[in-house]
Image 1 (cartoon, rainbow, N blue to C red):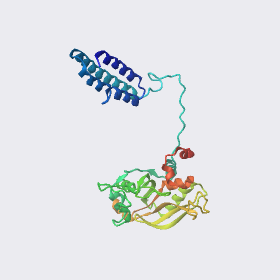
Image 2: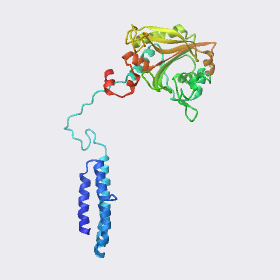
Image 3: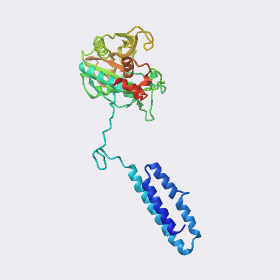
Image 4: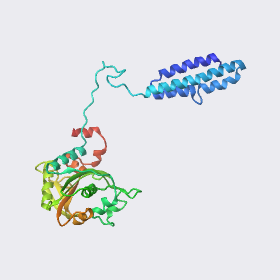
Length: 340
């Protein structure tokens, strides 16, 4: 291939660069002209058959071809990768009609958290937050959880190589709050939690909780706790919802109770959602164990209080009649639009 033919090929390659409309098309131009089996390697091989005088001129033309095409490819690539002009900016066509963007909708989990913050805020609770990666002390030991408790097992908890863990509950935030301030304490702690649960219709390894804590001088009895949770139930689910309390055990409260709401789907008559019992377990609660106060330096003789914790997804499922927790995280816009 002589000098004139190389210059013609250079002009063709430069036009091809300008005509490429996508990065993929531009890459095709590069492969055609500069690739291992492209035109430039074929040019270089063809130089051997030329006369010495023609070979020198063709060699210079081939080098110029490579430089020009490489530069054209780079410039076109920058143009194709540049962000689209903003409305009203240079190059924007202001005569075009505007594009309609449909309104989004708040996720059911976010709706429940926002509503819970409002309800508890009406009775004096403020919001506190803490880290997702926690120490074993804050997540277990400070909450009076013994070292042989099954929740510490790697089959139940996501342990990290550092010896820390992904928090299994938002109760560690309550410990951090008590470590950092003196009573009165009246907080709720909404947040994400992690447990090694096998995902099914009612369980997930990644979920949300809202926990509450009230500590003060003569500030919290079991009857006070029941009143707060009953108020929450009626505000969140409606005045017709039933509330019941059952004895239970938690390491960090004594006495402890489970709180159930009447099934919002069947009205307490019994259905598949409530396993035909008419009730759905919503929260665990109780009077704070004095040994928890000892961990944070509070005077258990002078102070009293209560704590509670509830699953946000569980409330969302009951409130909106959702039968499978996985539907909350499928990112199906058709499903989420129902809650707009």
